[in-house]
View (cartoon, rainbow, N blue to C red):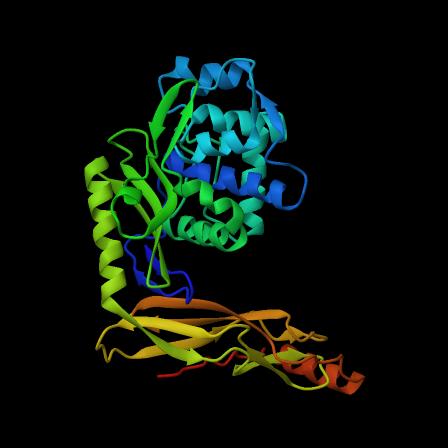
Length: 358
């Protein structure tokens, strides 16, 4: 999947909701939990964590996997562990961080799953913090792209770790494993992943050109070269092939949602930020949209309360999925209004009206 970060427009997708093996791209979620602990003050970059025998043996130099070469029983700062995690995909760094936060790697994976649900990323299922193959550990390209977008927006002060080019630890100098960073296309993150040829090679990446950020998630490539080449081609195609089209201004009324038991029958729905769609340059392709919500919505509602989604399609492709919120507060209605609405529901239910705009 390829998406525009600002507008959330999907520029291209193929099998984006298919469950795939994430390999080391799970470390993006590992990083999200650490970034959250830092942002909320429960952790500091200068805090230190001890490298356990399990972390050293499972993810360190004895494992012969990707490692930052953390020494057994040494104390390492969170900041350095993040570099080991995100620059060279250190399995030992992931396990040390997981154990430091949750006690065990398995307990940390449970927190990863809980956090994914909080973020609305229902397809992400984790069993460990570092990408070890497990049949139950699956993700989709769509939700991994959404996770990347969340991290970029929420943790700009820590996102920088993804773009650092190299790390030297235990006198071993290693380069960043993300091939996009060396391609001069504006890339500044995120992570690669692969276990073996059977599971394929994956990458979640992002790049900025002329103030526009694109986010990419791609899985199932045959080898590392194909992964880098295809990712570069897709990003370059996205930057040159689309142009913005304004759909709604911030605060503009998009439609209305039916209320149950309110002082009025409907509440206006507005968008909190401008809705901008990217469309192919010179295209006259028809755009259709609809408002989707579970209704009728029970009163009272408060202005700014999230109530619905605006889904815009470019042909058969879902090009945009944006949140809508109440444009005004609506109080609970009088008893006769609630009785009337109850009678309507009992008599056959209410049909939600689709919104369409060309």
